[in-house]
Each structure stands twice: as structure tokens, then as C-alpha cells.
Image 1 (spheres, rainbow, N blue to C red):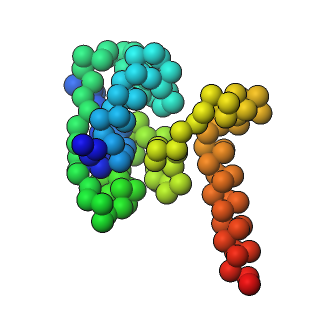
Image 2: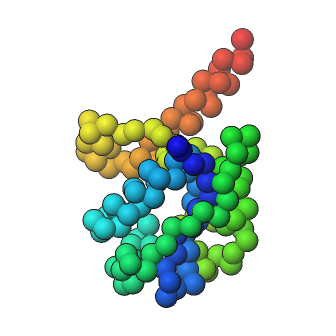
Image 3: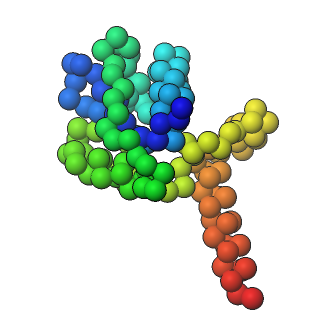
Length: 142
């Protein structure tokens, strides 16, 4: 069963924490563990402390189970706002609605394209969101 939740990653020997949200906690947790073990996690601050403290001191905790009727990003933002910024591994102080962690899969072909054109997955998502907004404006002009 998928669990929609706001979660945190912390280490027993550190007051720092990463706050995130997901529609599938089991899969997202596995993704964090895998990339941290491989040394390739996108959040370099979290990766550095994982390297320092080790996986045995890392804890992933559910802060809040979020119902289908509530916004994950709004609940995540509320939890982020409840901590001083200096205590968070989070790179951005504000959660973006158009995040890439919502189930969109990047195929090997698309990954090669992004790499060849020096674009990130976030660049691609921003481009899609911009184009979608442009299309919606054009569609409403009729």
C-alpha cells in the first residue's frame, strides 16, 4: 500500500534534518537509501553527513500521513516552516508544486538527451510547466 506522507531524514548524532513529501513512502525511502549508498544523492549536504555518520545512524521518520484530499506540498511547507532554516538539509526554503518526484519517469533516452544538452531534470520540468501555462493562456483566448 502506498503511503502519502511528509517525512524527515535525520541522523542520531546531528540536529539537522531533511523534510520531504511523497505519494509512495516505501519507494521514496528506497530511492534515498540507494542514492546515498551509491554516493550520488542530489542533496550534497545530506550526502556529506551520510558519508560522515553512516547509514546505521540515519533515520527516516513519518511526520504526517496526508490524506488524498490534502495537498502534500502545503503540508510539507508547513513542516519546513516549523524549523529554523539553518537546521535543514533542504536546499530550497519553499516547496515547488511542479516537482519531479511525483511519478514522472525519465527514460534512458531522455536522460542522455538532458546530459548531452547540459540540462537537469528540473530544467525540463520548468520548461514543461512554462509551455503548459502558455498553452492554457492560448486555449483561453478563444
